[in-house]
Length: 141
Image 1: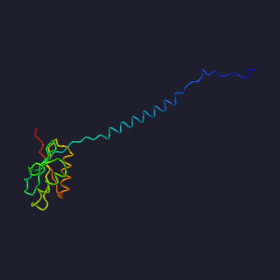
Image 2: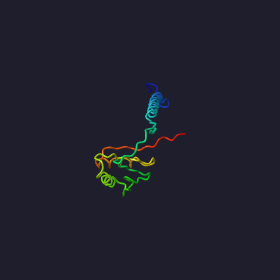
Image 3: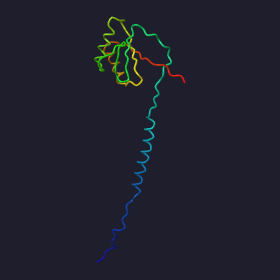
Image 4: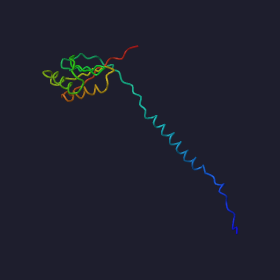
C-alpha cells in the first residue's frame, strides 16, 4: 500500500539569509569600533619656555640628571642611582642653608621620566616641598 508520496531528501537547502544578516551586523560593529579607536589617539607636543632667565639663588639646591641616569647635587656626584642615595645627598645639601630651599631639577633632554620621578620623590622624602625645573629657550631658525 502506498499512502502518499514521500519527499526526497535531495531537495533540502541551507538558508543563507540569516547568515548574511549576522555578517552584516558584525561588519557594521567593526566599522564603528575602528572609528572610535582612531579618536582616542593623542598627539603630544611638548612646550618650550620663553620665560626670562632667572639668576640662581644661593639657597637653591640644583639636582642635575644626566642622560644615563646619573645624579649630582650642587655639582657633587651622587653615588648610586636610587632614591635613598639621592635623599641623603639632598638632606646634606639642605643642612645649614635657607629654611625653605628650592630644589631645581636640571634634567637632560634624553633622561628617562623615571629618573626625574626619582628626583622628585627624593625631594619629597627629604622634606623639600618647593620644586622647579630648568628649561632652555627654543632654538631660533
